[in-house]
Length: 198
Image 1 (cartoon, helix red, strand yellow):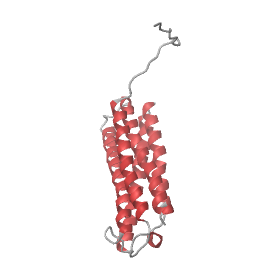
Image 2 (cartoon, one colour):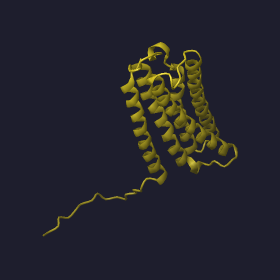
Image 3 (cartoon, rainbow, N blue to C red):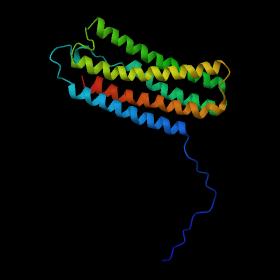
Image 4 (tube, rainbow, N blue to C red):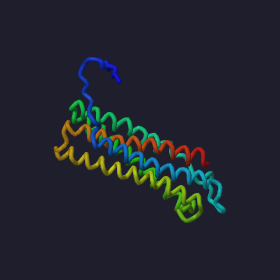
């Protein structure tokens, strides 16, 4: 049996396997996306099935300002990594710290909303099915934001300790993938909780 010749285009091909860190982060994101999907489906399934109040429309108010802060942080973290790639450490620090600030403001908004729901509206995780699914879904997201902020604060400490260099840009880009994921998940959570579920 004859073998047909294969004509490959001429030139040098510099193909490399993706870094282990990037592959690991994609695997983590896939696993976390599956977990969030389960919580979102549970929330949607139990909408309107609480036997007693309060109901979502009675107590929920869309956190527009805090949402804008969180989504803006995707822009600032991207800008920070680009500045690090370019070797502009001062600009990197400004954008990185702004990202931390925006994420912190979002977490403050979540804590403020929860305090109002618990103390003013009497909605706790044990009140009804709505309370259980709401705190579980929004709390899961807040936990992920907290973990991302802790990682970014650690990077900031390395920067101020003069231990962060341009060659660390790929690692920070991988961390930024996680932060983009957290922001994307919030879009889904926001739509489910504050738009569809009200």
